Image (cartoon, rainbow over all chains, first blue to last red; front, side, top):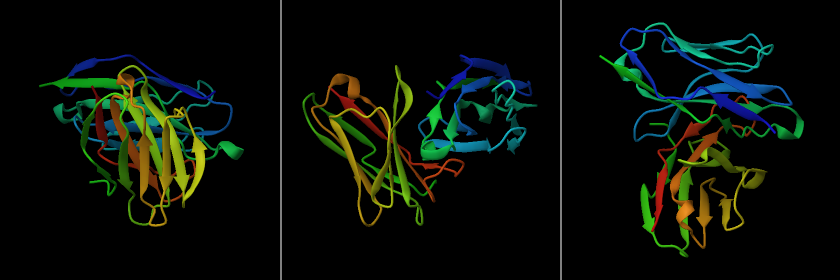
Length: 116
Length: 114
């Protein structure tokens, strides 16, 4: 079945450092890919998405490119801030045929801690 | 604020009991999803409703059931509760129950089974 694998955390960075969180997926169809963020004590918020190969999603300085050849959707940010400290989830949603229900399959989440 | 409301925020109960979690989707959203977040299983999809009808089912236990009412709010019923059911339960809604559409998540209901 479809699955998502994220790099294990926690990831600890200093403010203004470069961030990469790796995400790879397995899907039989044509998934849409997402990054969600969960701040402490809150629900999930959509950070960015990409719906087809070579699409780049971006928001608040974060970027991720849908790479079909490597089945990856790595999250990057050029300069992290303390306020970026949160748990980041990579997810997919299968768009093919009867699987096109919108249900999200999540990776295990990566905790990011940014120190001043 | 995502516009999705969930009640109660916290629920503490005993093994063997039954509880009901409630979700109100964003205005205009027809689809509701339920997810379970636990330390050992991570975030897992449970079930989806679209305009009152069940559309997709995930790893939802037979002890769990859900429904979506004509006003589009949804309830998740958990019965014969076990310690392992302790988790954060999220509801999400989207305008259309298809892939690629943004899902808005509620703040969650934290269930503790003692």
